[in-house]
Structure formats: structure tokens, C-alpha cells
Length: 159
Image 1 (cartoon, rainbow, N blue to C red):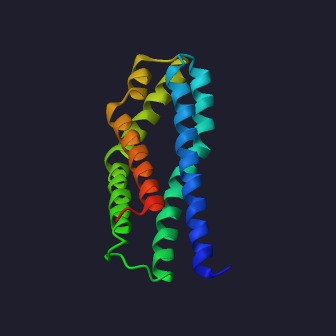
Image 2: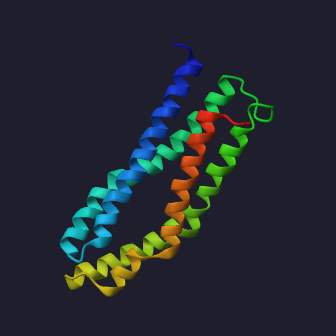
């Protein structure tokens, strides 16, 4: 197998792992949001951790393998028929803004809230509010939308 094709394969595998992590994380966290049992919530949060890692490491791998594949295969970034590449990169980069602005600070607050609920031994109103955080919900929905658009661009290559 040609090196460029092997890189492309790894890029696709990383993308599939990232999407699988996104979906699994959302299913598990959705169940945790609907629970009012602190023990069940804690268990579900533990279950969601590997899926979160799939998203984080998968997204980094997708970006690295994608760019390296593009360079190894000498794909032009700004040429007719290849404009889907810079659009995909820009879309992907737009999701990265949520890491320092939403995911890290809200995640830190969530950890404090879950720790307080643990200490009280009950599902608290504050924990319910943390699960319903509109900024996190928006960021995760945006992430799903962008990943779907990028998949469509990669497959269809419309421009």
C-alpha cells in the first residue's frame, strides 16, 4: 500500500473513532442528564470518560493525519476541485474555539458541582443546572453539525 493511501486510511479510521466517541458520549451523558440518582450519574460519568478521550484524541488525529495526507499526496489547498479542503479545515478549526471558551471552564465548574453533590450524597439542583448548561449544549450541537458537514464535504467534494 502506498504511504499516502495508508495515511488516508488512518485519517478515516481516526474520523470514525472520533464520531463514534461523539455519539457514545452523547448517549451516555444524555442518560446521566435524565437521572436523579447521584450514584448512577457518577457511574455514567465514568463510562463517558473513554468516549471523551476518543473525541479528544480522535480529533487531534483527524487533523494531523488529514493535513499530513494532504501534503504527502501533494493535494493543492486552493485549486478548483479542492476548495472543500480549506473549507473543511476552517470548519474544524471553528470547533477548537470551544475548548478554551466553553469545554474547559464549564468542565471545571461541572467537576466542582459533581463533587459537591457527591459530598451531599444526592443529586442536587446545581447539578441539574450544570447538566442543562446552554453553552455546552450549543457547543456540542455545533460540533455534531460541523463534523457532519465535513463528512459531506469529504465524500461529495462539491467544489
